[in-house]
Structures are given as C-alpha cells and as structure tokens.
Image 1: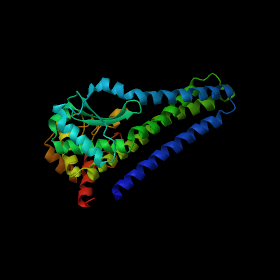
Image 2: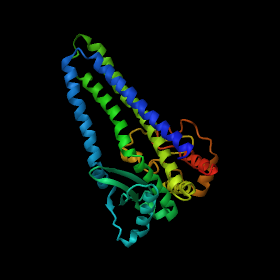
Image 3: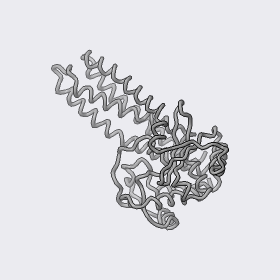
Image 4: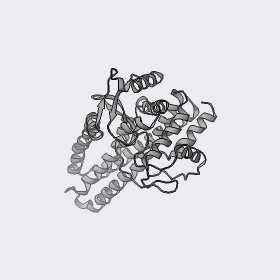
Length: 319
C-alpha cells in the first residue's frame, strides 16, 4: 500500500470517526437535556429505531430502485457483445483479490459508471451505454479499477453508516420541535430542536468531505491495481467531463448542490460536473491548474484537477 493511499485512508477514517463522535455527542446532549421528560424521551426511543430500519431497508432494496431509475440490465458471460467488458471486470476483480461482481449496463447516454449493492442484491458494477461508446478498453479498465475500489473498501456500507448520523439528529430535532411535552422548559427544548436541525444540515458538509476522500482512495486503487491505471484514469476522466457538455462548472465556479444521494456519490465522475473541450487539453490544463482549497466544498467528488494532479504524483513517485 502506498503512502498516499494510507494517508487518504486514515484521513477518511478520521473524518468518519469525527462524524460519529460529534453526532452521538449531540444525540447524548439531547437525551441528557430532556431526560426528565418521559413522554419526549419515549417518543425519541421509539422513533430512532424506525428511522434506522428505514435506512437499512433502503440500502437492502436500493439496488432494485437504482436499476429502475437508470434502466440497468445484467449482462452474462455468454453475451458476445460484452465479451470485452466481462473480461475486463474479471481481470480487475482478480487483481483486487475480490469476487467478480455482477455487471450491469445502464441505458443512459451520459458516460459514467458506479458501484453499488446490498446483501440481498449482491455486489454490482454498472457502466452506462455512453461510457462504452467514448472510452477505449484500457480506459474502461481504469474506471472499473476505480469502481472495484469502492467495492473493495466497502464504501457503500460506510456511506450508509455515516449518513445515518445527520438523519438521526434531524429527526430528533424534528420530534422535539413538534413535541407536546416541552412543559416549563419549552423555550430551551425549542432552541435545542432548532440547533439539532441546523446541525443535521451542517453534517452534510462533513459527509461530502468524507465521500471526496473515498473517491480519491478509489482513484488510487485503480492506479495501484491496473497496469497504466493512473494514465488511463486521467484520460478517462477528461473524456467523460469533455463529453458531458457545459452544466455550470469551471475552475472558479461550481453549482452548489448538497443533495447528492448515495448512488450519485459513487459515480466515477459527478454527473453534474462538466467542462467542454478537447480531453487531451483538459488533462494538461488540470495538471498545472491552481485550484482553490474550497473549489469542491459543495461537491461529493474532488475537483477533476485535484484528481488528475494526485494521479500524476503517483506516476512521478512510481507507486
């Protein structure tokens, strides 16, 4: 394992621990403050497991909903049209030392790929029709190496876990806000409810930061487990961004959107990110671009230039 991958892995784990520590600290503070109020406490104790179960059910059956939204269909090893893709996924899975996931085609023109799954649906990697159309086999292999990293690192499960924290805090605050049992401390509990709801939204920024680190970790996985992965991942990213057209993204400005769902977080490239232009020129520009520290603050993916430069450093260090 490279020093860069260790650093990013430890960094993302530190952010994950911080999310849990701060989140449970807030929840404990709420429980401690309203401990005298049996009615509110009982309501919270009843509701919390319900929300947790709802999130778990969404995780378990989410792949089927994703399949409906993105019009995915599973391919089999005996389909000649997908011989190359089957071979690539099997090869990359072997180099990652994990079982070959099920392969799905998403009938979507936007070029992208994503990893997802659950204990019921199994592990899956989906590639869009648009991705197959614009990337060459080596670039597809590099993208699969990235997605295989998500499966190998259990990012779906990790995102589900950290995502539960703001959900719980929000519903704790929501319950307090509309509780009939505030009594003499109505003002204090009302303030606590508002603070909890605001905190649940602020937690989204920590989750975005966590996801950006996991995306970087997946990029490194591709560079380390696929021959020429760093080079091919750079051109694949540039081709995808170049092919998507303008959607309000530049080095200086990006559409602010913090409502990304779990699937969008696991896309190879954020589907809302694009910058038209020749992909070779984009790669060269990104290698030397001066990118603000906060350029991707509202994004669930690192700025493309940051991804390109990180991959370039891996090549320079011959990792």
